[in-house]
Length: 207
Length: 248
Image (cartoon, rainbow over the protein chains, first blue to last red):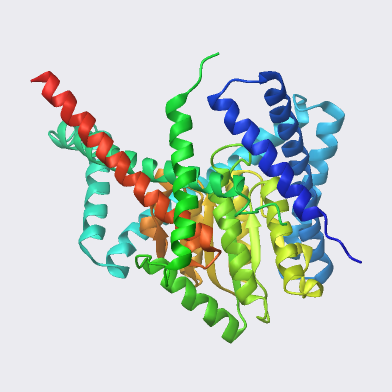
């Protein structure tokens, strides 16, 4: 007889702990137990991060083994990961080498990706008018241009009216009100998803 | 000991509405959902991927599992489960990416349990659920080769993403693959409007499960959300009108 006990046990744990933590926000009973459960969850998340690193390594080792066309990049990733891991274990996270690697490799690479993103977005905004020409796309591009023009001086010249009147009106009133409406919708969706999990209707833990 | 009666009442009302609608919906035929173009295109993309043997890429983002961002990723996991069920017969089975270790484990577990329920556990490979990177831009950089090199025909990005999602969707555009995306991050939603083929704005993201047929509870919770939204709108208007009258 093959009994799969994993699903019911994980569901009972998830619902029980979830209901206890949620009710603690409204009825402050057993705060120590609540803190202890949350601390345990944080520890498990820390371990999951380590598992994520192992998964990342396995995927790239598999690519190297298969000799895929990006195997060289995978090899570089594994070597870099190994060097960073060893230096951090030997010197600690505040050591000279880990800090040097972070400041001179990690930050410049991520900054360059940010720069690529900026160019990509400018290009995508222009393409939007050819890809999907409708009233909302025109409003989107026009608003983005007004915000950019009002954000700072151009060759030392601040465009009057746009910088001090139109930009604050667009970003703080129109965009601010729209964003609050969207956030309310996101809040409702978050509560609904959380409740579905507490009811056992959604089981993101496999099951 | 101080109790938050308002918060408790709100959560219990929401709970009651979901349970109530789940009973009402059993007696009704059809889901009674409004048309969202993104989900119609998703259905077509799934059918096309199964027919021409291409791969679907589902990304559940990089939200912290202990924070509220995790709920966006949970919607992504519900969609992953449903899409994998439909597309498991494809020559290239779906692939899932995450930007967080815990979410990557959940994606693997969802894929494994889906294949197990289909009786096709032999088709499951642990590398189908991947941690693509553990910082925002390393996650984007790790996702790009999947779109470019793994015969992907559609990218379904449902979870918590920041502005780095722009790199993923623009790459999808360059590779002429469909990008359907939704996130709980407001600046990233603006980026999606310009770069994604189909975008899920605001609470449309949380409707994903209901539209891909993940279960009757998803439809019930969507109807409950509608009621709560209208109640909130009424409260805001009444309070604003009251404040206005007081000021006069």
